[in-house]
Length: 316
View 1 (cartoon, helix red, strand yellow):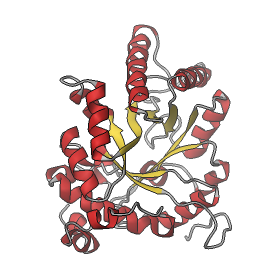
View 2 (view 1 turned 135 degrees about the horizontal axis):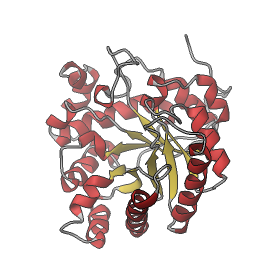
View 3 (view 1 turned 180 degrees about the vertical axis):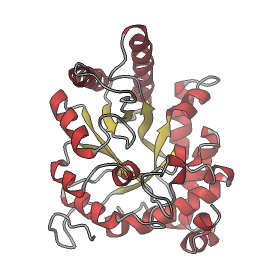
């Protein structure tokens, strides 16, 4: 079935920004990521907080800020925070202390968005729903005080908030301007979400977008490790991008491919091929790149050819 989107002309909408999540190169260090990414043309990244915290064991936040500045990369988001919605007692205190400390780091780094994972991993009781909404509202207000907005990521295997529409309903219930949704195309396509759920999505409640693809694996059985580069699989991504453009989304579209096979490949190759895949997938929605980035993107001329021939997918 071909998806239908909001009506728009070829010139309507807003361009979007190619972005890479450090989860795509999980096995490499933060320093290696920040060296490789800009050489491939990336200008925007999604920090992986475990890498950040590993780096901060031996460095200061000011050191990390200087490293980002030197690389020319803008950290537009960080992932991922859990444990906020249903935790109680001592467990809640520990999660929220960690949350607050992360917000302090993000404020110092000028990172405006934090992806929050839903923690509905057990059978829920009636009282859990108002607790989740109240906790999300509280988390949003705390994040807002640090200059950060939360992006709630629905997850296909969650007992609740496994779909886009339910997650948007929870966000609406918490009534916080500091909370929006993270649209991860993997969880959208492999979970119970439907395309008509996009009717509830607008520029105000869409906080972050993550992109990938899937091929050769039944959606019901697909796990994060089955993700591949966008444009190499079965997802109908173009109609979704058209819809996001039509509602005015002009933020980053982050490549998040948590595929262990990629983690065994040198970071510069993954960065090259990932960048070419995202550029091709965004198509007319790709924001004009800064002068000089084309040269960086083509610094390894074999990268795009390898990506186009399915080099990564073929090796998985």
